[in-house]
Amino acid sequence: MRDIRVITLAPYTAPNPPPNSVARRLLDSSQVDLSYAERWYLDLFKTHTSIKCTGYMVDDFWQRLVHQVAEEEPAVRHAAIALSSMHWQFMQEADSSKSKALSKAKPSANKIPSFTLAQCTMALVSLRQRLTKGDTYTTSSAHREAVLVSCIMLVSLSLFQGDVQAVTSHLRSGYSVLMEWQKVHFDGNPSGLVLMRTFSDLQLHRITFSQARSDIEAEADDLPLWQAVTISRPVYGHSEMSESGFSIVLGAAITSNYPRGLELRLGCSLRRLNDALADLLYQSPIGTKKTLMQRLMNWKIEFYAFISAHRDSLSPQDRGPVILMELWTIASDIILSTLKSPLDEMAHDSCLPQFQRMNELAALYVTLAEQASMFSTKAMLLQLLHLMGSKCRDWHTRRETLRLVRHFPRREGFWTSDHLVTVLEYVIKQESAGLTSSDVIPRAARIDLMHMSPLDQSNINLWYHRPCTPEEVANGADISGKWTNVVLSA
Image (cartoon, rainbow, N blue to C red; front, top):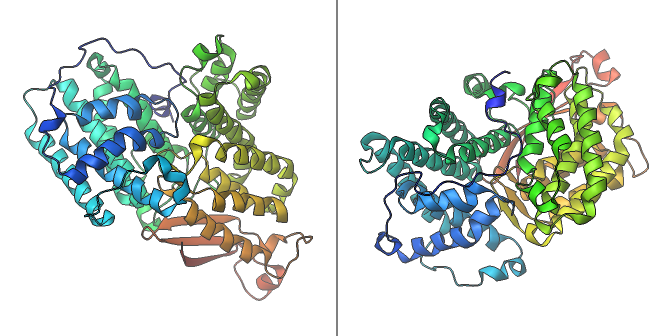
């Protein structure tokens, strides 16, 4: 676990890069050999998609670095075009009234899926050419920066395509380059810390879903953050996770949503809050002997003290991220209980006030203007809604969660509203069969473990586990319970 600290950075204000810190060749965009359709989608990426990718949070990668590198790197340019074409397709499929800002007619000559695939191919070819040939005009620092930005774009594309194997492969390759570059302190390039944080966000996203169990052993070995969880389960499933591993993953999830520059906008020090978060990440030398529960309690005390003092003074850009931080903080006890053995699904019934509060916060979050039809590379809200919908058995509360997922279309990389609606509807139907709204779902009817892996963009392979009833055990069933496998179509 000692390597995890490398990629889970504490909240920071992005440094101002010195002028001319990296040697670059400037290209006139008018000289880039792009078709009209490619130019249109590249412009869409600059003005809309890159903003959506970060959930409207301040993010130096999506709002600055990727645009700089795209000016001269064909791999990044074509990946940006592919990503924006996926974004356009998502917007077209969502409520058209929510896309008035994109009223300009899109190029009519393209079928989006084949166009996107062609752009992905060109991005891969361009990256391979850079890796094999290199460029004499760039420094070693600029070369590594370009390769890593290209890698992040390819990971993002693979997330939206539901290609788990490609996500794993690109992350592993990019992480290796990043760690080598870190050994020389990023050659003084200020983009190094920006790239570290972006890789941390993507790795955190990667551990919220799983792949075919036959591939787990081979794919999970060499990305340190993954060592904190068992890859065969999403974060809400059972795993033999260490206390430090859970604490670090929770801290990374909170850090991912921590608003950049928050102290400057509030005009006050948040040292105690930041120290408590560093403690969760095992980055505080004074907290080495604290237990997990002590770290969690310390974080909750400092976070709710911060909320009490500053909730009414938060700027619009900080309101959404702070809601996500509160959601993860509330969810921490629920998630922790799902990672213990033996599992006790009945224990979640006592968490009803927490589930109801999470519904309130989620409803507030999705109604923020900038969250309409969200298309983000970050795992932000959907997996929390899935946790709520799968673990809360109160009839009305879990159906309110389902309503939020269904009525507010979102795409967060691998996670889509359509997929989760399909899964949650199936789970609720299985658990509630033959019951009324006033009935308590019995233990034997409750699904305690789930394993999801994508087959393609429309279908999900779902394995789920339930304990056997005493009658089934008496008739020779396995006392450990039974697994069922179904393919669900969104």
